[in-house]
Length: 403
Ligand code: ARG
Image (tube, rainbow, N blue to C red; front, top):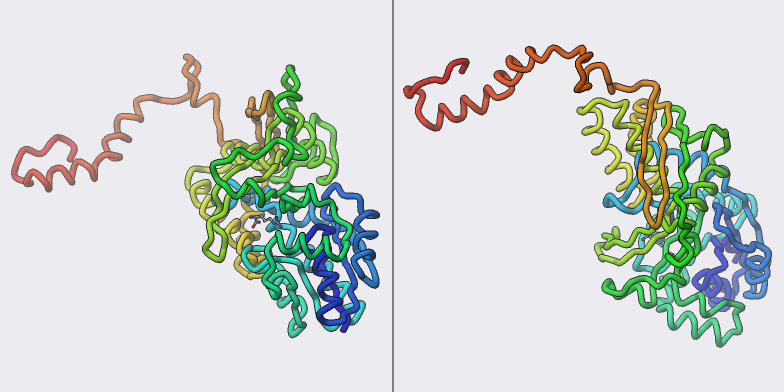
């Protein structure tokens, strides 16, 4: 049997290589997909081969990830449960798609992934594989074998699998949009995550004493420049990640509801994702009307929910994306932000299609606003409330003027 395995180089997938060989005498093609995780892919290749893979294939998908997935997430202000920028969730359909392409090219008998049976990733990988490769057998060794992380480590040690066991105490998923950190002491929701768990966000001892400001330029809802310097999405995200991270901004620590019904404590470092989504939301407030914003919030939340739940290929997600894209027309402008000592603050914004009118809102004498209009407006605005009161008191009692 030949199997294409989505390989990350971590504990789960390395154990999976060995197990696929032992259990199924499988010939394993390890497929690593570069979605912007800053990893040494040569070392990953060596590990895949040392664990027993016949072949290692590296697919560079980071540009696609940035342009086709992350850009959508920014336009949708994608935050699951209002907190998590979906970094892991968003990459799964892309990773699965790239593995599926290899699977078709190599004519394999099955595809495999290293997800456990407790998480969301299994659902996302299964979903994408079954949509893209209908009828293909899917093997998930860790799930099938029902292994715990400790048992996996023991198995890896016993078979001399080449892993960094100190690092392996955390379960980490890393890509351009963010880094998810789980397991070990983080499983106690009361315990503060140790600073050593973070890779992009600096600890307080290294926070610069001087604040740093940048201007992020958006075109039709998509960030395109920093301080007037145009750059592609990949470079832009890297720049924001390192600047925000250097100042200690970008940690999310929240209690998350997994698809299968478990609550889990999740820790993320997502400096660029938080900065860009917050800046984008701010710009939307300049350009979209009140009812539009209200409605888009519902759409955004549904979008995040679908992506989180592994339903990327659902037509509803595509339909929501069409609405979202329409909503972004003319969302061209700039947002100025400052990073300082663990925080990010929006300092200013301007937008081409702004609904904000200084002439009308101003407190100064030049205001074009005719305040006399206000009186009739509030009379009608409160009409129904007054009628309610009348009904309560009995209509026969004195009717106030205007009701
Ligand atoms: N809870 C997050 C999600 O479902 C992160 C999962 C992290 N995956 C991992 N292998 N550590 O998207």
